[in-house]
Image 1: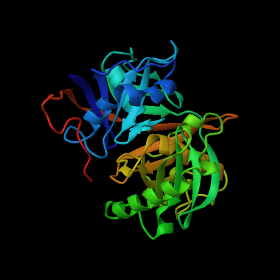
Image 2: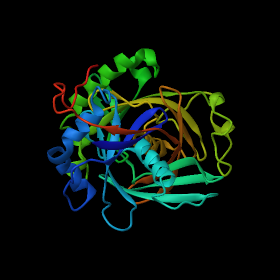
Image 3: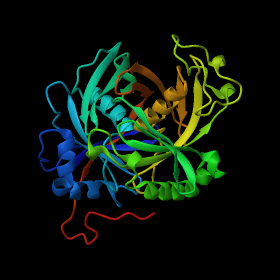
Image 4: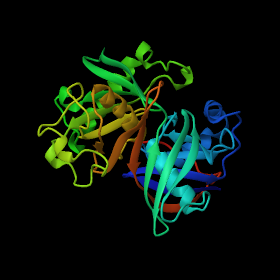
Length: 351
């Protein structure tokens, strides 16, 4: 029997496995990711595939952290395997750790939940009010631009790293927009772009080849400034009316203090659609936008209307450190099992 606690962050599922997973060997979380397919892939399939999951399911195995400096270790998974980073999952893990009492939290303040993931050490800064979780900020690994205007599949993309490597392109460049009615077309473009980038030099991680390869393709629309929510910009940032009346795309930002609103959909793995604004994808977008001149807030909307708010917390020699605020909500507790006589076994995906 396998036990889980399930959350969603901005509409994107996150299934935290709390029991029933075989031990996964490795000196650190990144090594455990390499070893996970040989030791626990049957559990991933069981929980991710139908009839217990679906083609867009997401979750993690809890594993020991790399050292005593972190509270948790996490191996993120989806229908096609194990990923290197997950911002929406880190937000959910922060809420989970506080709500389950794994990390003692300030009932009227912020508490850091430190998590080791394959791409490095990240933080979920959990904000509580009245003893309840009111918000979680994902503090990413350093993020940076890898390449711009890479010609691929009849178009051009920008490539950046936010714990995983993403290709970004304006949906308008393809004659589309980030709307549910265009999802089928966007998924098709994402699969073509990702396949064409396989083995491309711009998709290699500069320090650890285990982090190489395009994980997802981000399609975005720039949105008008007059649509910025009233609470989009923190009190210590410039006012929302600093944004030009027309939306500001990449490459046309200028000056300090601009605040930008965009809608995106991230298609990751083999055609999976992120319902949230994508945490690690938002970190990768912030690297591109900061490089283009953004010095304020990115209000990042998803295809289902959920919102993350992102800022640059620090600039390091390795890249920017993005902070991405969202919220996760518990959706259930589950005990799963596999009948040995069940001919479907660990399941299937049907899209």
